[in-house]
Image (cartoon, rainbow, N blue to C red; front, side):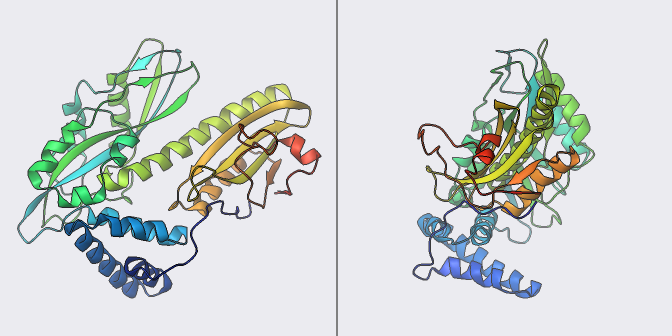
Length: 377
């Protein structure tokens, strides 16, 4: 699949911004050592902003970013700045979150509890397998909270919080039960939030690049057992624990990818059992609600049935790696041996031109009337 067009509308380069210029300096160099130096300078500058209560300066730099790379560079440093540096011999509190992508189905109206009845068993398993690196002491809350609750905690707030404040904050994340709107399998994103006590001597603290360890399979079985309901299948897939400020983005990405896998499986079964091989259209759509965001929309339709339309919408944030998302989509379609894939090379509108209340979903019927300019791959 060729590269999809970027539907996000970043601002034009405006007045110089010191934080943004630091990010650009980091991105413009091909020297890893120089890039590390620029990143450290940016991290120190953002930490100084948070210490002074100048969160607005960081937010302004993010809003002024003119590309996904600039936004991602700033966001990464802002996330790192949410953890205050430790002096030699010091022990500090760190909030972290364990993303859980829960696949559930089987009984419409079933409700899975929003809290784990035995979170101590989960903590013991994570500790046994060293899931938090060199951290020896941590406390895990039992609430399964939503991504919105995590995003409500700002990086600056975390950076300025005292140790006792962080320790009190972890148990305050509200539980959110999972309600199944149908019997079909569906994907739900939840997080377990905890506080870890980290020593300055610790050689490794959890991070976004940590792989899923040997703890993942037993943890899935353990949590599935605690959430079990009659006539309901539950598959809670855990991602590695990460610092709180990074958890929302990583969780959203994992949920989107797994949701797309479920969608493709179901759409292919329906198409192949009724009309045969589908036409799959992959298109980038801008967002009328968020200029910095957009969506990749994948539709399954048929030349033999104009009423057939299965669609998946993959949201794209301002810092997301569009090329990686496109590669994930292309890889799964290839793995499923879907040959009739059509890539739309131009950014498409959010809404249907004739029915403004409907989001535009391109189907085989559009290709027949030459509505979008598309190419097959």
